[in-house]
Picture 1 (cartoon, rainbow over the protein chains, first blue to last red):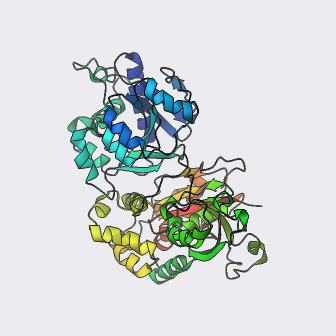
Picture 2: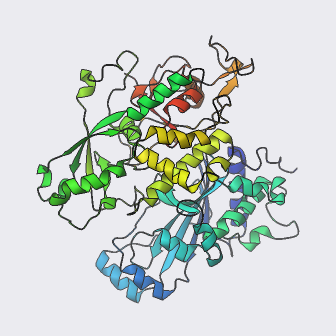
Length: 243
Length: 318
């Protein structure tokens, strides 16, 4: 039995969004190799949320020193959410030593990397998925990560100009995470419905496939790529048939 | 909508609304600790806190331990809770100040004794130690604030029209003009631009931009506001209202205006068991208790903040 078609296309209902999150999470859990560093499905009374973590490790070293001069203090956030189910335990939280030993760590220890925590939620205004993300340095003492760092490290080069040229400050803004209330970046969702409407494949998609198409559309701009394993050709994708 | 003149009258009163503020410099940042003189001002409800910062920075400059801080390093707290600067001051006041809201009987008596005790609203301003976990940082040229405002305007516009085309087609001048009109609290220049975004009075909104803020439990963490938002059409089938309200002549006979009461009863049935009478809680907007019988589209057309949203604060009764 196939899924009912999307009743509010190009928008999603909360139920369809929930189903979409489940489908993508289950598909990713079935293929832990390759893929994202971690993915969790969070189900709350307010709705579902998909949390994906990635690490950007190819940080050009020469960019760090210039950035370091403006470092003020460290970002050190704790996990706020209670996941209902977890595919993999989140990476061991790096214990943050005090500032002095942290400085030493920068020179001697492992390569600095930028941890990106993506949260996919259903926008209560636009009724389409919206991508929030927060950034955290690992193995590198650095101040809060600003919008310039997002464009420098997170947005692939081919999207930079297009994203920066729209709106007051570009297609990525700083706002407040709808669940935690903490500051977070987000990709503007106001044109998502129009964009999805123009993608023929999305119209008759299952919720899970809708979300993968959306990820291909929005995620790419901020370095969140759909693992090849999840979109295997030839109808073997776990997202077809059942969700 | 039946009375555009009275809606305009309400809107003018909303824009004229002010809250009395007493701003003190954080003692830890002051050369004289808690002996610094406070800054007193009556400030428009539709304004945003950061627009006060240049004046405050100048006023407190001789007291600052850290003399190199700039005005956009400034942030506000009420009883140690960092205040989200992207919400208008009127909403923050309704949320936190604890002042008893005006009612139909008390609204003309602004100096009523029970409200006098907690006024002016006492805020603390800081110019260092930005709370990065709670607040988005500001920038020197105000782009971050402008961006946040326009994003909020876009959301309201999307709900009203079902598309984001209106705001997207707004010229750059009008887009920045809208923000400037709110910054300057200039209602006529605001109306000139916002009227190009609003559907004409004869054409109902698709959905009505309302956000509902739930009461804060006493042990609430800072910043953890509970906000309810749902698509709210201005008219609903009459069968879902058991009341004797007259049916609007413009709508089809089977539809009735959605009221504040029907919204609250549908979204928060435990707090609002009745559509017509506040029993356990009451909705507050611009410091006044909102009648449950008020049609929500009229509420937003007359009493929205500059970003197009009506922000209702739910207060427990008794």
